[in-house]
Each structure stands twice: as structure tokens, then as C-alpha cells.
Image (cartoon, rainbow, N blue to C red):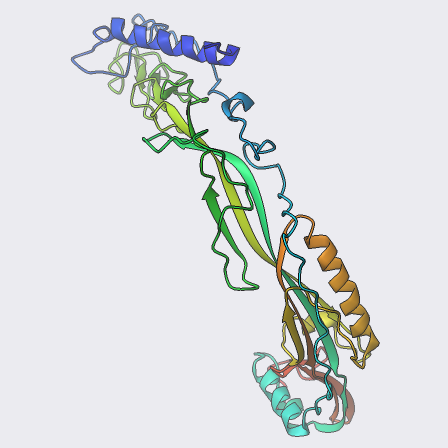
Length: 412
């Protein structure tokens, strides 16, 4: 096997450490106490002299990304790379023509009555009582002088898609089945997956059959262990009490390190090396292809702007009365709606969704709805001045930016 320069360096360092450990396990004992694996680069300090430190080991911890040669060339998965990045796989052409969308049923009644004056007042009182510094006097005693209904339509198109992507993955080898090249792996769109309910986001990861093989760990070069970076592979570090001198004051030997000037490395427990995190000491990896299946609900709204003065952002927090619903494999744009803005928005969004999502995913279902969000602008007088507020949504939310009594000490 031909090793790279990094692998060769790591292999040489590891072998050097193992040989040194065998030769020096009986050296450097103080009062039968052990302070980590003896380091051949460490020289004990003479009395009163500073300790000599071990030369730092290589900072290289092995390559973080596996080499391209680690992965087999699987038929049908030639563009698969480690960590993803290959993008989503386009779905195959359907074997049969897709069913053509049909126009939804035409509605006869698109409008609903506006709210009553009692409902508007109750919503206003509830709004004022929810504010700690709002006096309820304007809500209770204000005289309603006008109510204007601004029925606002919200068109929503949802496109539920399934997309698939692949990536090479690996895990410590613990005797798992190795089936690469036993037969050709199934295509990424031929692998069955359990889809969730329509319009519910979900994700599933599946190990592709007949792609698993066993490889040596690329991080530790198949050793199962790596030099400890905290002690530079020495197994011990400079004593923090005496700062490596071995003595505290004058001729007083440091009791923390027993005059050695170094102490056991707590990260590797004096071994000078640690278990490889990638293979978890197994030395071998199981390499295979993962298929990620994602179900995504792409939702887009269009709200018909009205001249009521209420901010459109407020409408995203409320629901409306559903006037129209159409759900099928691919929907047909809305027809016959009295507001041409809704008709135009439906035609535009349906064309955009079907063109955008059919390239990299499979469209499973579409749904379009029209909601009527009631918006009522209420004008009222209080203490001889005119004010206004809005009541909107099925929840009767209130928007009153210029509430006339916002101080707790206001006379009730």
C-alpha cells in the first residue's frame, strides 16, 4: 500500500512512540509513582535547573475529509460525493402520462357579511384590557360613528414535493454486512420510502443496498489511535505548580510532580495517544451511500391589497373564512373569481410552482385555497375627538396604534 506524506509521517510517529514506550516503561519512577508514559525527548532537570521539554509532536491529526480513492465507483451513483454537495437528483420521466388538472368548481357566493357593532366593541374592550397601561374608558365609553368593511382575499398555493439526494457516508466497522458489488444497487428513485401525509414536511435517510464496503480509517491510518494534541504525544505536560522546574522555593522539591517538572496528561491519561474518534478504535470503517429523501411543502401567499390602512403584515397572524379549496395532483388556475387580482395571482403562481419544482423534485400534490379575511375599520369619538381602530380576522384581532388613553393614571 502506498501512503501519502501525511500518512507516512503519522505512521512513523506512532511506531516511534510504541517502541519508546516499551524501552522506557521502567525508567523515570519516583517513589513508585508513575507520571504518564515516559517521553524519549524529555530530560529530567538537575537540582535548581529548569526542566527540558519534549519536542512538540506533529500537529497533524490526520486528514479530516476522506480521500476520493476511498469510495468505490457505484453504477448509477457516479456523481455522489462525501458530505453531499452533488445536489438533488432529477426524478425520472413518468412511465405514464400525468393526469391533466381540471378546473375547480365555480363559487356562487364570494362575500360574507361584515361584523356587527357589538362584536367590534367587545373586541376593542378585550384589546384594551390586555394592555397593562391602557385605560378601558375609550373602548367602553367611545361612541362608534362609522364602520367600513374591507374584505381582503388571501390566495395560497401549496406544492408538496419529494426530492432525493445521495452522499457517501462512513461509520466504525463493527461487523456490519459488506455487500458492495454483490449485485447492482437500485437506482435512487427505485428505493421505496414511506411518505408522510400530504403537505407535511418530513425527511428519511436510507442506506443504499449493495454499496457497503470496508476500508481502513483515513484519519488514523488504520492504527485506531492518534497522538494526543494536548500533550503533543508526550503523555505528560509541564507541571503548573512549579512551572517545570521541579522545585518550589530554593531546594524544596515540588510535591505536585515529585520534582519531575511534568505531570500526567489528563486528556490521554498518560498514554500519549487517544482513541481515534472517527473509527472509535476499530481501525476499519464501513463506507456506504446514504439516500436522503425530503418531503417539503412549498407554500406561497398572495394578499390583495386594500385601502383600509391596515398593515398587510398583520394579516399573516390571523385566519379567514375559507371560500375555495382545490386539491389534486396538479391544480388548475382559479377561474371565475370576482377579483381579477386573485385570478392573475393564481395563474402566475401555478405556472411558477410547476416549472420550478418539477426540475429537481417530484410533485406529489398541489392545493390552492382562497380565504376572505374580514377587515373592519371602526371610527369612534371619545372626549370630543375622533379616533379609529381595526378589527380583522376570524380571531377579531384589534389594531389601534393611536389609542387615546395609554397611561395607568388616566381617569376612568
